[in-house]
Image 1 (spheres, helix red, strand yellow):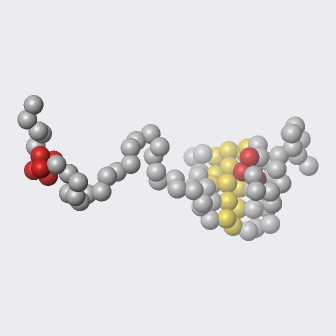
Image 2: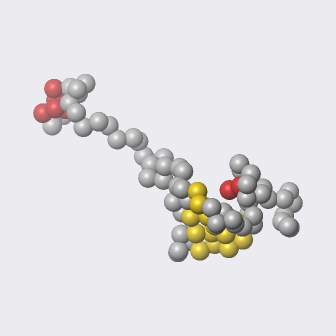
Length: 88
């Protein structure tokens, strides 16, 4: 039984990851939630019944930097293709 108010979501609930963290081991890459779920840094989960949930969020995308552009030259100016700055 969860001691938190409001109670943490059950392990079977869609919002199960919102449960309080009761044990955290960031150096090992996992945390134990109040509802018995072990959640891993790569967003994978181990449910209390032993079921596994594969990583389900893109963790390799940085939100603090712009997306990389395609490496082709289509749409690039002549100066950009030649690797030089345009004249001022």
